[in-house]
Image (cartoon, rainbow, N blue to C red; front, side, top):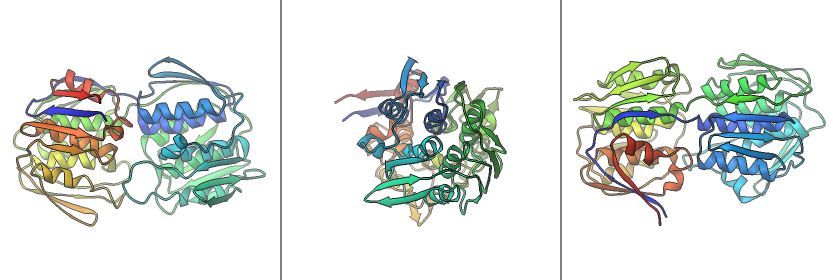
Length: 418
């Protein structure tokens, strides 16, 4: 099992280039099924989840050609399978996007119930509600999801809770439905907009993505196209937080600064210096940092995927701050790992109170999920002595070449391959 060995105390300095957005890529890859032609996706992040999804499409009959690690050409003309029951499909949370894409193309689909990080209950009831509103019959038996429709017909759909996954999935199913679908209380995240832009480039008719009402007018055919994935706001935010935590000076390149406003605002509130450029953000760590209160919210609020790294930064701050998790109910499992390092954190339900200015000491840590893994790495960067981070399978799902990028910034970090 691979592990990272980190010697703390080295400020990060230099430039880091952000990869394509993981969450956008995982919606774009199944979307190519709807084209029945050739699609070229650029700036795909070279990470486990994306590569696994690319392999799944290959097993479905798509011709897949890799131009390089970040550009892939998909020819889906000969895709005929609407049933994918293998273990790789089961392991991926984002495999549920196959339901919308395959319903849109074949009007039927059979896949296993999706897996993913254990960060709390992650129901797909809003997805199912949308598919049924479009005319599909959906069943869940023995861990297998089956959906089928004679035809899909546009309908008004109101999401009971804001859900990125349901918003994207319903868009995938509705683009070829007859008539008009109006999706209300839709998610507004940048990767929702990215998927909508891609579908429109293939010939779909989607308006309103990025607002809470999305109107989808069904089309009969969709064609291939070329598309570049947006930068990953979560990877960018991770390096921004790491720069502030280590009292470094890092230029985070290939970003859309507007997507990072909630993160930049909190870092400035804590005392870090933020300088925005057209496609980059410079973060300069300052001493001392001040404690803040954070509540995770759907975009444009503070992202739930960055609350774990932010908790490490708050351990460095003066005073007592709080993190309230409003998206997932089980996203504080990583706190026990930070407490082993000397952090003073009290969790009460969906809230964590963090007493700052506690000296963290290196020890062996486990990455309990993807974003917790990033938090463990940042904790190792600021701790006294050496830190060993295990369970890198989670980290590798969402971060491209993390140890190499940190090395280039001056971190003392090495991956031990067992």
